[in-house]
Length: 214
Image (cartoon, rainbow, N blue to C red):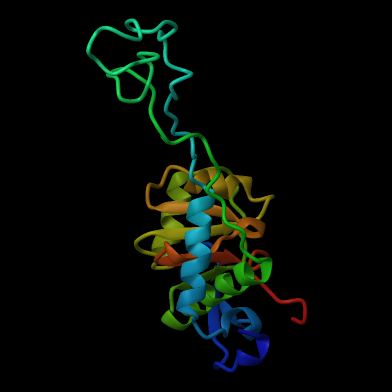
């Protein structure tokens, strides 16, 4: 998908104060919020993201790592049994595991442009569904959960809410931290998965994504 495909109608979004008062309207950048949804692209990017955050720490011991097994369990000949070299072999109880899992990375390589385009797709979908909110700023005097709850109620932000904050918005980030269905993310670390997993996405004027042209 290229920018030439951004032919969807521009979307206007109300800009509100912290008490919910409408201050005006903002026309969203069509290069970010006017993209047609590409489901296979979103699926690929989200799958790669979830794979990248897997710990990959599962581990089993091989025959060389289990305790014991230094000597032959019985002599080579004369017992009527098959010859055995060690009790740490995989077919013995308590022996090593053959071809078991070892710590590894599940990360997948995904082109940067695909990641950026998938993020634009999910942001555009939220814009068309009316699930974006915009405030003038996150100018919280102090970290207060009560203030954060009042803001969400004033904006009619229900369900799972993603609040996109700036690096300087420490009071706002702390205010939303105790709310179980609210996730905060820095504007420069916004991911497709976080946006896709939210029912409502809340921006401030300084965290609203814009293209270089805009």
